[in-house]
Length: 426
Length: 54
Image (cartoon, rainbow over all chains, first blue to last red; front, side, top):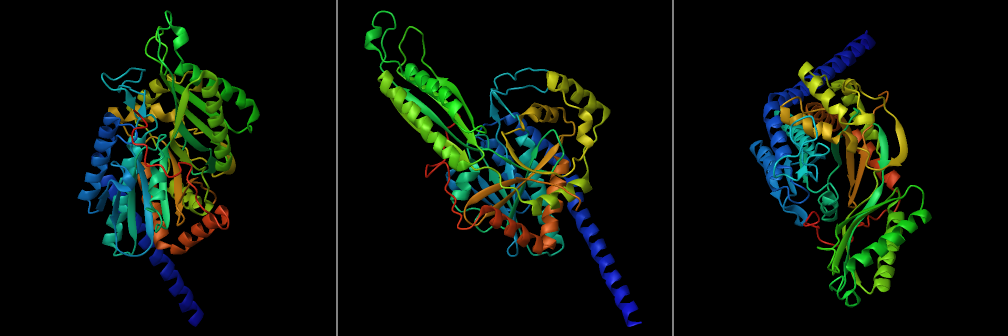
């Protein structure tokens, strides 16, 4: 009989726990749904501000105001970046962080229309949905705070306002400053063309600008007096392009010329290139970067110019964490994919035609991909869907589109490790 | 956006209610990172490149 009572008691406990869990989840989900129109409006505003890395003044302000109004304590301008901030709620217990990004990309100006069309007077645009990224993460932090408060649960929820993700390495300065030292787990996500929490890595990268300085002269009447800075840059690029044959296969090197002179008939005294070097291993990136510097040095000697280099960014590759990925996968499966209204589908179809041969299947938005664990690295890989996401929002259509969940866990030793969230049979 | 917010919120809930999972995640993290790990930023000691988009 005692055993019977024990079993009944255990079952009762399990049932109570399940019910409590359900109640908790309801609190969280209802809080997000209740405030959805506010979130949509802010995401749309950030889309329209389209502020590039470290210039996200209005965008970060929107999120700061939102979090402040919801009872978070704000620390602005952290780690020497005016548009970086931290919002926190809670006094004790485990510390969980959520990352939010909000920077746009240069050269992606686009109207709300489903055809390629620039916005008047705007040169940048939200390419990969960072306007959604920051807001969704803030919404999750607010819902968590509300639940912690309502259920008197111990814990600290912290929102990290991370500027300049696109090439500016904003988070690295925050890590370097020790802002993640005390945190237990950090979560984030990223819009994508697939709903998945699968595991994978990325390429570490180092970026920077090489500047060449020469001597100006008239290119026709006194060319012998000139020493072209552009020659220096071009000589460097020639060597760099030859170097490609002698680097490890998974390496990626790319550049653009940002300054190359003002007029063809004037020997340019200044030229500048902007470079990216990538590899799965950050140590290999370091080695390649040194070789790129040698290319610049050789080019400067040969063209009788001078050069300088400014490193503007550098991030490590993602280190996947399956423990967390599986949790995310489970929750992703529970919430499910996205179903569009007829109006949204029509708009999405129009957009998908702009992808040409890479046309996307809109129905994929409702599918949750199975969990996989794959350590092979890829480039950034998220660009294809960017325009799709960015364009959705302005029509006030469901701005959620697809969610590639990423997750970040940060160590006490100043390391940002991101992991693509995975899901499995858990 | 709506789905992402919900998934993240459910995940903070899972972790706050099962702190053992936090410990497991950290254990995995430290193991994968390796012993005597020292983070050496690729950006070195420079200040934030606030004008990198100029």
